[in-house]
Length: 67
Image 1 (cartoon, rainbow, N blue to C red):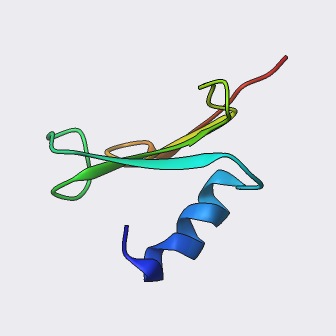
Image 2 (cartoon, rainbow, N blue to C red):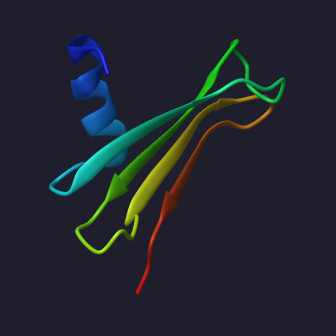
């Protein structure tokens, strides 16, 4: 992950701790050539927060683990 995108990724995920994973996907559902799935994983492998970037007709889709 380029360093210039690191701060933006932390901001998108509301990152506090854990591991960050960036998945790049190529599909026509994205508004650009490639979409990005950003995950914040804790030490148990759960993702308390995830963001799917640049989805056509929706924009960014945010998910958060509740409970």
